[in-house]
Image 1: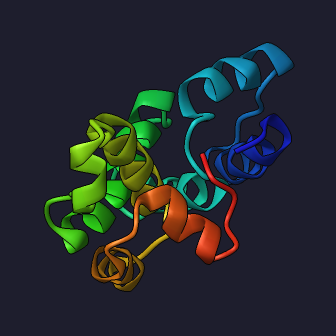
Image 2: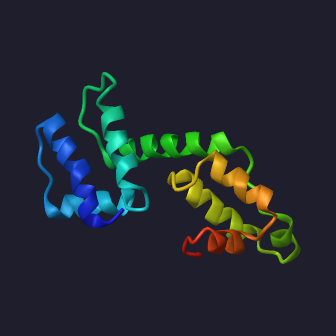
Image 3: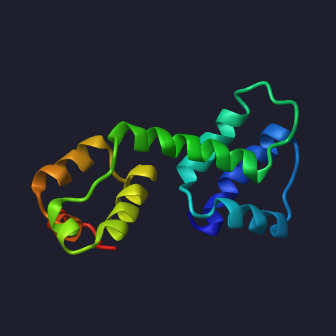
Length: 135
């Protein structure tokens, strides 16, 4: 997410907890949560306050809930593997990292992953064929 997008999650926290965040605090939250999506951050804030917590949320609390959300997506796809061509060219770590990012962020679901595997194309070829940016 972009830095301004984090403000939505912090606004929700402000409403739910009756506190405000300085620009410095918001920047610190962004350093911890910035690699994740705004939608997941908002869902994590709501999940945190859907439980009987008796304290304010901290960035680590929200990050842990985001990682749970992302973990569910990853588990739905099972073991992530590149297609054979990537194995032959030693591209497995890059492919695995890209697959993990696509799935954990929700850009891809299980059907997208299965479609890629059935295609027998390299991930770069598959993404290009789908009209998605490569990399």
